[in-house]
Structures are given as C-alpha cells and as structure tokens.
Image 1 (tube, rainbow over the protein chains, first blue to last red):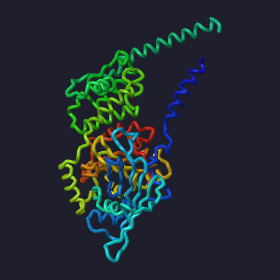
Image 2 (image 1 turned 120 degrees about the vertical axis):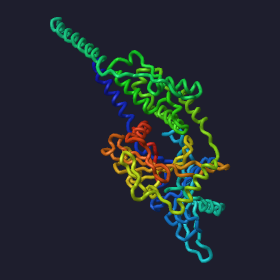
Image 3 (image 1 turned 45 degrees about the vertical axis):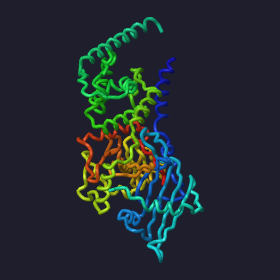
Image 4 (image 1 turned 90 degrees about the vertical axis):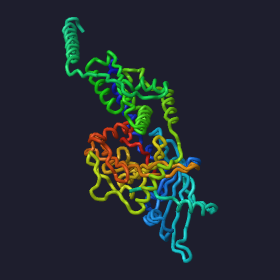
Length: 159
Length: 321
C-alpha cells in the first residue's frame, strides 16, 4: 500500500515530463519544406512579396536578388542579372493558431534568371519545378504567362 | 507494535493535527485579500450559447462577476484565487468589454478561444477544483464556429487600397525606416532595420485579423532550423514578423496591402528571463512607433504565447528553404 504513495507522485511527474518538449523535428513544417539538395537558401534571395490565391487554396512567396528587388521597386524594365523565385504551397490550417493558414504541401518552385540579350533589354530564362521532390517540368506551355505574372507583382512594403 | 509505544505516537499525531488546524485558522486572518465585484460597465455581447460557455468557463477570473465559492475562500488556496482573479481581470475582463475598440475585442476573443483550444485555459488547477468549468469538445466547436462566422472575407475597400498607395509611393521613392536614432520599445529593445534582408522562416495567412505575414529569422535562427535545434531556440536567435493588410480582389487573389507592423522575438534566456527567455517588441506603421504604454507591455506578449510553453513559446513552425 505504502508503495503507492511513493509511486503515484513519481508517475504523475513522469507523465508530466513526457508531455514536455515535443521532438524538435515535429516542430519543423516538413511537408512545406524544400528538399535540402535544392539548395534554395544558398541563392541568398530576399523576400519580394507574399500572396494568397483563395480559389486555388494556395499561398506563394516571391524572392529576388538585390537587382530584382530594386527593379521591381523602381518599376523599371527588366535588366540582365536578375534572379527571381516564386514558391507556391497548398494552404493548411495552422495547428498552433485557430485563425491562421500556413504553407502545407510544397507545389512548385519557379525560377527566373535574366541575362544580356542583343535585341531586348534582357533574355529571360524560366524553370518550373514541381511536387515535393521539385522535379523540373519539361513542358513549356504557360511559361510566358507565369513569367509575366512574376514580373508584374509589386513588392510588399518593407520600410 | 505494542500498545505502549502506540500511545505517545497517537498523541504526537493528534497534537500535530491541532497545530496544523491552528495554523490554518490563523492563516484565515492574516494578509487576507479582498475580491470585490466592481460594477459591470459593458458586458460582452454574444449569442446565448457562446456566452453561456464563456460565463461558465471564464467569468470567475475574467469578469466583475466572480463567483467565489466557500471552499475558494480558505487560505492559503484563497490567496491563489485572489491572485488569479486579479491577473485574470488585468489580462481580459468581459465586464468592461465595450471599452475596447472593435479590432481589439476581436483579437481578445480569438486569443481566448486559442488559449482554450491549446488547453492553457481554464487554468488546470482551477479546473480540477471546479469541474463544471471544463470546456468540452462540443463547447469548443461552438466557440470556433461563432468566431468563424464573425470573419467577413470582404474585398479590399478603397480606404485600404489608398492606404497602400500612399505608403508604396513614399517607399518606392526611397522613404525608409529610421537607420540612426532607432526607435526603442519601453523594455529597451531597439528596432532592427535589417529584418528585411533575413531569410524566411514561414508565411502566414491570418483570416482572424485580415493580415498577411512573413516571419523572418536572423542567421542564428536559420542555422538552428537547419540543425533542428529549435526547442529551446539558441540564445541570439531573432524572429521578425511583418504584418500587412490583406487585400483581396474579385478573383480571390490576396496581396499584401499597407505595412502594419514588425514584431521581434529576441532569444536570451538570461537577459529576458522575466519574459519567458524572449525579448518582445512591436513597431507599428512605417514610422516604426514602439507599441506599449508601460514597461510591462511584454506581459501581454508572454501571456498570449504561454500555450506554446512546451515549444519554447514559439507558435511558428519553420519551413526549411
């Protein structure tokens, strides 16, 4: 009988300890994360804008290098040397906050690189990577529309 | 055991019981706090089923209609009851609800329901003594449905698009936040202009308060994410969360509107020990006006983050880039 007086508090403490500190990997939003070998962060791009498409239930962030940011902010024509990226996720409910949606499954990463061109202000190179593994899409239909969309976006105000 | 050795033991126990009871009796008269119910000046207005849940689960500490049961009045428990009521009313008081502006009311209610959902409220010890205050899964659903119903996903109106146009024009022409003589919050935290050059931790679409957000992390925070060392976060890690108006067009495309604020969380378990190991600050509008009326404004931040105490007080789930 006496053992229970000792055991009970110990068990309560153990139960409390088990609830503490969830595994750190569980706190990472894995389904939204980019594959490590894609090396996106090594590009060192900065945030240009953020948006949501309610019909598609997606959210996107556009990133750019300094040149792309400056051109977009000034509203001047595209120049050679710009790098832009748009990442799109399906939205999901934020399990930590009722009232918020956060990135869910990774859908696409679209990359734009501009280089010097004899005829135009710059040559635009566009790639579209799809799915969790970000496989390069070969089909080029719709590319022009996608490129236009990314260039048209105004940067988010970040004083 | 023999009867001879039992008698003194019994005597000791009996006298101990009397001593304890005596002490308890004396406790009732020393340092006795007073819990008053001031007049209700502007009670929360909500549908009856919603209000019934809040009254039952929250009003003992979060209103001027505290129902203190006889067993709550026994010290030393009574001291905690008085403290809970005092702090509860300071954080949220449904009896003076109408004194708050509409957006503030909405923010408080969403926070309250989130505190309940996370199991942080009602306080566990209170729930054990007062089983009737438990919020069931059905109750929670009623509260959530009510809140969802208050959200009006309106199209961007001209006041919001105008606000953006004015801001954007100035910003595109080179207007920047202060770089010298940095604004300082009342707890001594300075505005950090470099936030926009940091990497992204996550984005968030807040339909509860009509904003879009990007959470940035400094190098220490981003490295910690890479290594999964985020519970606890390392000292020196900083988040900057930027919020903009949520501007929606007729096709359901939502863009960022006017810049509303940037909020920082700076990890330092010693320097900011009194606020859960994090230094909190919020700077509003492109002028970066520090938020808070007194030095204690960060208590508000900590209270709201408390349900995340097992996640080092961080709501954000980082996305690896």
